[in-house]
Image (tube, rainbow, N blue to C red; front, top):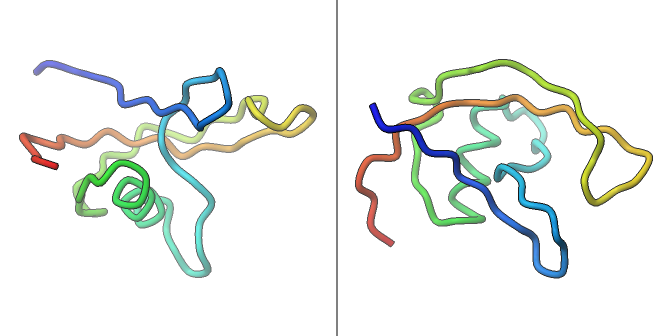
Length: 82
């Protein structure tokens, strides 16, 4: 299968990163990503369709001195139209 990586860049910044965000109360990481994809880029994905790839920690790109912990997923977004 053809693999692609979806990246976004916040206005006024230079770093590209995977879309995502902070969880709301009671959300699983998969539910958080599904909500954030809909909000940020208009993609509609089922949280149950997300395949977990692991949890990773790195320096926060836009917040010096802070770390970000990311749950990373793979998902087939098919042929979605805007």
